[in-house]
Amino acid sequence: MKQALLVVDVQPSFAPPPFLIAGINRLLPTMASVATVERHDESRTPFRAQLNWSPAADDISLVATDRVFIKHGYAPTPETIAYLASLAVERVLVCGIQADTCVLAAGFALFDAGLYPTIIADLVVGSSLDRSGALGVQLWRHHFGAVVERHEMLLST
Image (cartoon, rainbow, N blue to C red):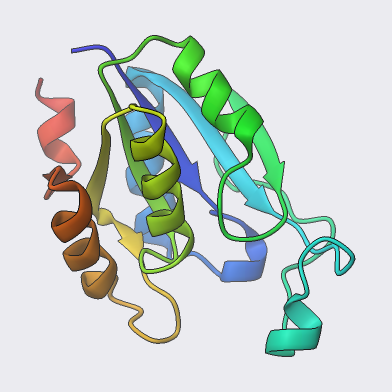
């Protein structure tokens, strides 16, 4: 099965745990990969005004994917989705930070583009509401159905 990996916001502002970076790095050599990095620009997304918090304006991806796309806000950019579509994959595997917000927003964008989003349950963490990521995985399963429970399953196929 031809697939690509979308890594959502694994960047310093969100303090990713070491297991997340290590697991993603294990998958990177096995398929095409894209990362999003959320950067702050108050004129585009009012994080400070509404949430009294924001990611850094100069954050970088902490994993070395084939491509990196900068975004401002929760969802991936149309350019990110277009690039993934250009790869002509059968599904897009999704992992990263904030399973119940940014990762879920990526799922909706991929779904709407017909790109068959599949979350990797052991390679997501949640927001401060649920750092385990379990809520995000439950929401993903409800909306999209496709869940890979453990990333090792992808290494053996």
